[in-house]
Image 1 (cartoon, helix red, strand yellow):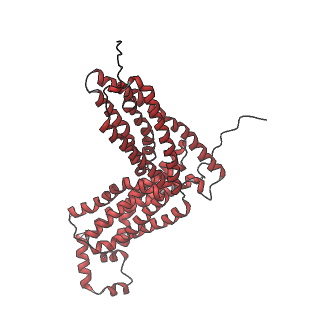
Image 2 (image 1 turned 45 degrees about the vertical axis):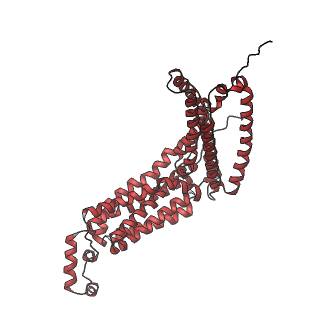
Length: 424
């Protein structure tokens, strides 16, 4: 019997996208444990009581005797771990250095994710952070400066990994499942904090503080192997995804794309109307001269979308910010409707239609050239091609803005004035 086909839905907790959320959960778990490890280990690293124990132990007999004596407990070997004379000020700098590293990569990481792919960015960030965690005890022996450098670079690596996650979810998470998937992944940070605070002190007492770094650094390396093996940037290229799940993800994102595609036009219509109202308000109250109003709205309509276009490649890892910028570009560009676009009515109302036709003709020619140039640029390299398209469009806008600010006028031109014919 014919009937309305049911909406196809991909598998739920047994789906590949849920597996991705679980792997990302453990990635976040690993990164937060590596980040907090030093906060736990620092108690033993600067323990002055332990340092006196080390000095006393060294005078009682050679280290070889300790290994020959099987009755020595593991806790006694803890006294052999290095202890450092770090002041509270130095400790504060060490703790904050990882945050400096994260801040340094928040914006560039989005740009790099667009070039190399979010999978490589997140995996590389996790791998670098894990290797530096393993290296931290040795770095401490070399000096506090090296520890600060290691922690700063580790923060940069984790900054790349944090921001790269959202680029992956933009292609893997259906709109109605984003909250579930991202919270599963993000909860790894809270779970990791709980685990490191519970077992970090026990590891330090039982095995000595360097093993805190060794254990969680090694865990990160294992997680990296799983990440590079299982994870792909998008479901279309994953070799193990089922056809049903792939269709579900693609169709869900396509429905959302239809809604999102309409938002720039809503923004454009709103900016056009609001811009016109504001321009006439400034003129009616004699707040600004006509030429100033025209140049002001031309500047806003060319400068704002240029800034958004230039910023796009650098925030590619953030799905929300990318969508906002893509909406603002056509929206703010329509502020030009109260600027140079209607300037022909100011300088030559008699020939406004003729001049508008000429300007529209140049606009059509620009559309043809831009389409051809865009196709050429993205054919060379898709990722960097679009970046160059955005940069080129911003450069063209800036050239047009400088030209109009230099030569733009709003007074009625002599050649456009009506001449009164006198009869002889």
